[in-house]
Image (cartoon, rainbow, N blue to C red):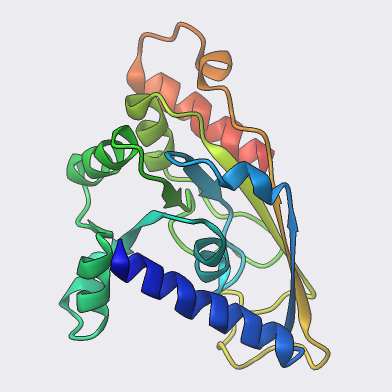
Length: 202
């Protein structure tokens, strides 16, 4: 948790620096919904800085990190020290995420798995839905918009609008998994229904 606090401080400084330099304006709506512990946060992913902005705001948060980062001499130390989850694929990742939530820890997941296409959404993977179903944790959606578009997948990190950009993060009411999937007995079908509902929301 000490390493997570260090990373959170670094991200807060980074986000503050972007604002101070006039590069970006960060707007939050409903951020108070992120204060309680043990929540599953799901978000769309339009920009390169979505994760740092969210992680700078939430008191404690775990996330899934690309497995290759754990082999990086610098990033690996931070990722392991922060207790982040390596994305080694398969059911192991789902179980690790569920275990964190059942311990009362918060978790950030981007259902697209990568940044969104400009002004759109990529395909949603079912991992977030499976985590919600197995942990019995209603996902809290964070809808992110960036105007004008910046730091998106098709551009380099230094290619930003001349007059800056505004990143707006709107935290919605948690999805009611029970209301969405009902008494569905097929776990695969329930995951499809919940995934479709999340994508429709975003």
